[in-house]
View: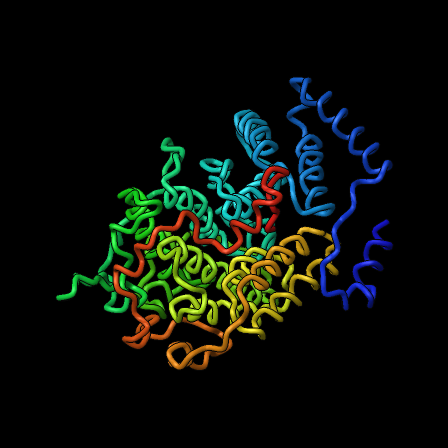
Amino acid sequence: MSSLAHQALTDEAFQDRSSLPVSGGPTREEQYHRGMAVTALNRELADSRQRLSDSVLATLLILCLFHGCDTGVAQFKTQFAGVTKLLAIRLCNSPCMSDELKWFVRMFTWIDTMTATTNDREVQLRGACLDITTVSDGEWGLENLAGCDASLFRYVAQLGRLNLLSQNHRVRTSSPPEIQMPSTTLPPSMAYCPPDMSGTSYGASGFPMPPAPSSYDGSQLSPAFWAEWHSLRQKLESWRFVPYRQRSGSSLSTPSHPYISPPSSPSDQSAVAPHNLKDVIHTSESFRHSAILYSERLAYPDLPSSHPRIQTIVQRTMSHILSVECDAYLLWPLFVTGSECVLADHRAIIRQRCKDLSRDSGFFNNLSCLELLERIWAENPGTSPGPGLHAAVGSVSEAGLFPHGGWALPDEAFMSPAQATVSRKQGFRWHEAMQTKRAEGEYMTV
C-alpha cells in the first residue's frame, strides 16, 4: 500500500493537475484495523498497569499520525485532552524518565503546538511537557526530531495563546507564559524608544510599535495581550542559534552578537551532527521568522500582504527556506509564510516544497495545507513589489540574518497608529479558508 501511495504521488499526471486531489474515505480494511487498534487501546487504558506501557503511547501516536497521512484533518483538541491526562499519569509514575518517554512527550507536544497555532486554540501540552520538549539532552532532542531549536520552540508554543488574546477570547490563566524583562542593557537596534512628537513609538525592529488602542469589533485589546506581545516579540527578535560548544567555551564571554535575552541562552547540550547543523540553523531561522510574521499579523490584522512591513519578513523567511536542504520539518513555516506571499516566484517555491514533502512522506496533510494556500492565493492575486518594497527588502544573503540596524524601512513604509485600528476579527489569511472543514477537525500543519 505504501508503494502504491508513493506511485500515485509521483505520477506525472498528478504533478500536472492544476487542482489538488481530494482524499477519499478510508477503505474497509483501514476501518477494520483502526477499529481493532482502538479496541485494544481501550482495553489497555482500562488496566491500571497496562496503561503505563509505552505501547499505549505508541498506539495513540500512530492513530494521530493516521489522520495526517489520510486526510490532514483530525480532532486533535479532543484527542489531546486524553493524551494530556495519560502523560500526566506517566510522568507521576516515572521518577526517572526514560529516553523513550521523553521522545513520546516531544512528539505529542510538537504536534499539539503546531496545530494549535493555526487552528485558533491554546496548546494543551504545556508545563512539564513543554519543559521536557525544550531541553536538548541527546540525540532525541527536538533539533533532531523536528529540526527546530528547542529553546526557540518555547516561544513558538506561546503563539496560540497570544492569538486567542488578540481576539479577546478566554485563555487558561493558571499557567501564563513567563514575561521577562531583559537583565542587560539592550543595544540601540533593540531599545524601545519613547513616542516622538507625533505620538508614534518605534521598537526593536525599526518599525513603529503597534498602538495600544488597536481593536477588533470596537473593543480594545487587553493589556494582557500587549504585555505578552511585546515580551514575546523581543524574545523572538533577540534569539540567535548558539551551538553548545560555543556556549560552553571561551566564546561565551565574548559573544559574536550584541545581546541574547536570558531565555535565548539555554545551558542544554545539543547532539546535532555536524553535517546537520546548517539545516538545523536555517530550519530554526525559518520558524523564528515565521513566528515574527505571525506576531506581526496579530498586531496589524488589516495590513495588506503586499505592504513592505509584511513582505520584508516574508523575504527573510524565504531566504532561510531556500537554504534548507532537508525540508521534512518545514510545513509550518511554509504555511504561515505562504499565506502572506504575493510574488509568483515565492508562491511557486512554497507550492513545490509542499508537493515534495507529500511525495517524500506520503502524508496528505502537506497537500491539504497547500489546498488552503491555493484558495488564499486565488482570492488574493499576486502583485509586483512597489519601489518601497524594493528599497526595504533589497538583496538578502543566503544567511538572511538581520542587518545591524534592524529591519529599518523607508519613512513612506511606516504606518500611522490610525491605520492599524480598523476593526477586523481575524487577520490570518487561512482563517476563512479553514472554516469549511472546521467542524470536522483541525488542519495538521506538521
